[in-house]
Image (cartoon, rainbow, N blue to C red; front, side, top):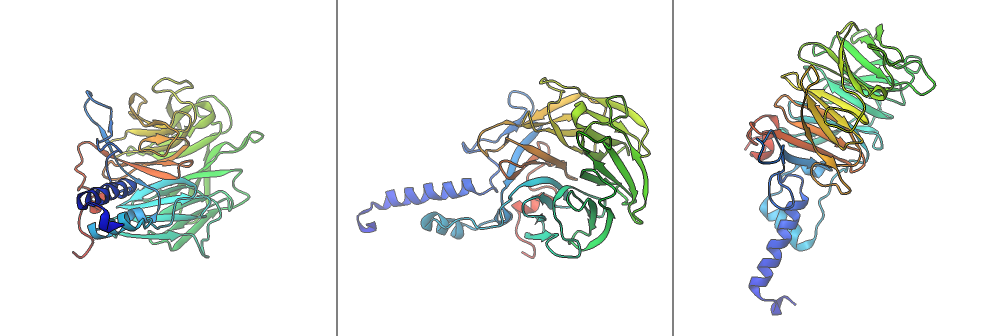
Amino acid sequence: MLSHFPARALLRSIAAAVLVILGACAGTPEDVEGEPIVFPPPPDEARFFYERTLFNSANIKELDATTRLRMAVTGEPIVGRALAKPFDAVVCKGRIFVSDTVERAILVFDIPGRRYFEIGRKEPGALHKPLGVNVDANCNLYVADGSRAQVLVYDADGRLQQTIGGADWFDRLSHVTPTPDGSRVYAVDTGSLDSQDHRVRVFDARSGVHLHDIGTRGSEPGELNLPRDVAIGPDGALYVVDGANFRIQVFDQDGTFLRSFGDVGRQSGQFSRPKGIAIDAEGRVYVSDAAFGNFQIFTPEGQVLLYVGSRGAKPEPAKYMLPAGIDVDEDGRVYMVDQYFRKVDIYRPADLPQEAGFLGAWYGPPPGQ
């Protein structure tokens, strides 16, 4: 009974419970020991800090001290829409768009607006199997729907603008990227083991007209084998994850082969199961690898700079069992999706203060205060 419980012990118990609640909230930019997780580790100069993890829609909310204390004392759970099987993520001006193949929707974490909403639940534009996602410079959202075999285009608030393709156009649609001005769409047709249609299909974004294809099945320069993802660099070049050839191939936007880098292996700079790709404002290339449980960072020419993360058996920060999509936002923050652990880890560049950039709103007062 509380009447026989020493006051100091009670306070210590409550304080410990509060710390447990704080540790369970993805808003803490620290590991369970309270020390920042840094890449590369000391004594090397820090380049990235692990910052946060998204598990569900409740993670977008900052809990005040009173709410946290009540949760600690009563055992009240953190309630929200959990990620069920996230596949990919893209970020534009602080809005984190996460495709979820089980939820059959895009889960949107609007950090500056402190709100959560979903895209693709209803017609027009109901999603069946949302896979790769990307945005143009105006934050219009492009979704590769594997079951519909279409690219669906929405505005940033989820209003359907356009559909591209259809069952006759793709063997296995998996990813998509538009040009920044939204004039062209590059859609990855991963193909299958008995298909020759391993390619990137190019469309006029506004009319939906098919323009041309990039690649055919093979292992020679310019040929593709189970392509996985595609991204456009600040130089306008097209970077394609050539999955079963264990390399990144680079083309101009009309499909002319420029160069490639990477090969199969387990050393730094090699690939085992490359999945997602993203490119930052400086042209550095980020590639997730499902077998390594990490992402590697390269120069545009393919020189490896750093790897971040490792395989793990628990959903801990910077630990991965089945990493998939990856993105880099305007401020240099990196977002890494893990399908098995059902999470999105967020990393912050070491030279970016936590209050800076679009996600800095997480550390400031809510809008209007």
